[in-house]
Length: 470
Image (tube, helix red, strand yellow):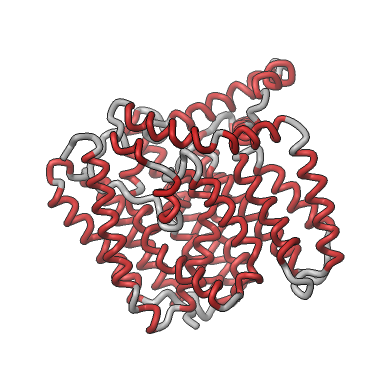
């Protein structure tokens, strides 16, 4: 078993990214990506792969306590520096300390301020209650944000530093989940991947809910996994699991559905020797009661509507993207049948200049990282199926399966933001794949990189051709 991320794989990943930048810049010279986005991408890719390999070797022999301490504080320092930098970067680029096309983020910001004004004027219940109506799936974050604003006097920078703290602690949760499932050494790799993962760092600098949602998902899985595996049953821990699962419905409905689906999957599919019958019954009763409360009102309507509209939503959204100004005319051909095969490795990066997609260009390296680690994710899943070890990891695999299935049927199938909830699980599977790589499986790595490289080149041609730019 590998206890480090071998340099062989990290070096070739960096070479692939640099090669793609060169090839795509030559092919599409008239639409070459601005140099500052190339620098962002290089930092994202090089730092992720170089330091994942380097630190997995350097931190390999230190004690667990020291590893966790280093993991948290290094992750926190990286994120705080990034938050401060992007606060001023966005301000200089857009005139406000918000990202490009910050419709959602600015909406959350204004709603949080409004909530506090209603509270101060003693109108919170009379005005905000009717305003929410049945918008439960999007109500949690503005309320959370209003609390942070109340404490910090509407400080945007303080809010993002809070995100940095939550994201840093998420790295520890991912380490613990992986340790419970695959052992200490694999967990150390997973923790380092999470610490350096570009998307986790990037979202700390945004005013959207993904950082908080990933923290809660990781907490749900970590506590749920602990509840299932621990010989000593704790009702307090069970209450925490159910409460966190419940809260996910107020951030994104399908995340809450996926969480409870995963929990029930453990109860139905786990063998009695893995989780005792008495514990199954207790967890099952509590989870059922929670679901009945959820499905007894507006949330049931929202879930039902989402499911009923799944096909038309995707079709209409793809058509709209094709017809909108600066849209891609090929978008109308996007269907779940096309998206499904790529869900584990998508989305793909924008490495050409699309003037309305600055956010995608800024995180271009993060997209490439996701594409490349797809090799280890696929390897991990193949090994778990081949050895029939997947029964020991039902909680994480069931969450992954149901969320990806719902996402593939939705209009957000290739949206990076909507892939974020499964990133903790994908990083854990990446670490497991790295730990199990051998000479036999390693020979497929370079062909996989060539395939991914070809897809990325094709994707960027598609982005330009659909806009009549080539």
